[in-house]
Length: 225
Length: 261
Image (cartoon, rainbow over all chains, first blue to last red):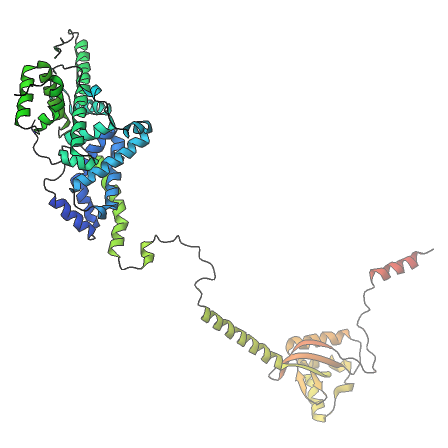
């Protein structure tokens, strides 16, 4: 797996620029907050959309995140990277949006996640095609969002930060207030579940396409391990 | 050498993909993937899942969303910028301006000036009226025309017995009337006063001793008449010009008497 770096997508490589900008804004150049926003808007929107699935909610959360960041900018102490701090605000805001939309989900989210066995993949079928090649960008987004939506929010957050935002394990842990070990455990479950759901959807889509072209169903090549 | 079960393999697949496994475990996972086609598929598809998730083009920020975001922030930042630039400004600048109050009619007056003007007006008015009042005279004397008055003054006589017919002579009427006081001074009336005197004279049936009480304003030699009446007669006959109109009650009584059988 090629992972260029732990830099989040849409954020600048170095953090020095961020810290200098934050210092300038705190010193009174409040107009430069827009610069800071321009650096991180993509990453924040990406996070919010992946967690919330709805573009409208993601837009609201993105705006809310930056407004809160502006309001609490003097509480940023520079211990973490600015992008991590922003991610933390974004995740919290997304959680509040989710809580507002699906309050029933949150009673279960606060309980410890113990669904160990259920998290293991049940079937292993080779994908006939790479979704990146076979589907348009919009279809890929839809596939991924639908697969993510089936994940428990606590798993979803981890996989969104680690694999979609491509934060490091440590940054993910920092942003979510978890230990690194905890992130790794959740990440394993989350990735396998996501793979499962994606596989199911890809198969369903492939089967539908086969049916449409009246070709015989694809032979199953899964063998028990 | 480690030999893994499929479950062991799956438990470490995430760390394997992230490159977090050290030598022996890494080797063991690779070996298992090579020997177990099922796990090889899981490994492959999980990697592809992660690759798809990390696809940079996905979940791009639509330009219109970015625009709205910046517009909203600009709206929030705009008043804050004013606040920041006016740190030394009084607190009233920080607070939102109060809604404009409807302006009362008494507002915005220069009160000292207003009082001064009012005082001046009162003083002038009072002064003028006092001055006028000071020139108001009430005189008693005999009604006489200016033409004949000169004669009486020259003779040092009072026009007590000046006859009615002379007073109504055209030359006398044209010369205007006035009052001759006991002190021998003649006060000519203004034109309106003269006309009133003529009317009074005509309406009267006196023949002489036209004693009057006149109240008027002295302006130079002329007396501007304000009221003019016959003086209370002292022992002389004072005749009413007209009998008073009978009251309705009297009329009724007369009628009843007249129609009584």
